[in-house]
Length: 268
Image 1 (cartoon, rainbow, N blue to C red):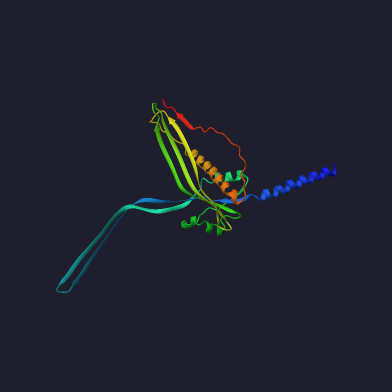
Image 2: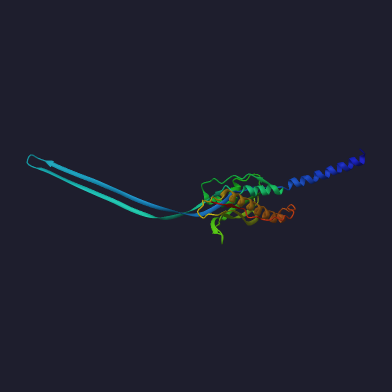
């Protein structure tokens, strides 16, 4: 091997190695929290209280010439009844819908996902205090924390007869909307903010109105999680292009025919 060829190969190896270092350093560490939620809950109550108290007093005296005796009794009872509804605020975290967000981040090649500690404190009013959670070390080694809250979640069950047929279309759908903030763990700045949506549906066509139809709830939740992850990473990439100088990977244009996933059940 000639000296010139060795120099050329060595220069090429050095160029490749120097290019690899910035690529490794460019990966951003992000912790993804479970989705926080808050809702007002109403519960019915009925309360019955009953109590009674009885007492009896007897006194007597006797001498050689006379005898005296007396007795008295007292009885008291109390009864109360009340019913109605009371409401309270329920707060917590959904331990679902974030796995696909993490997966989409890893597939991008730009992010490294660090594990976030779940919120387990009894004081649920601090659930939304993301700065306090950062200070307590719940997101070690992360440069950013993607904090998400549920703003709307709604299941729908519908049964729609198809005109001029004996078929009924049964549909179970779920729509979830979340608000997200990407927070810098050093400066506590909000580097990106957006809302994202996930949708899922299962549909079955039944030829008898009296049939027992079981719709696939797991399939619906899986579709919501996947579509939410795609929407979240799309918006994170768009907003980090300016902040981190990040260019999303070039993706080819895919023309996909969306087919309605239905199942026909025939009863005879």
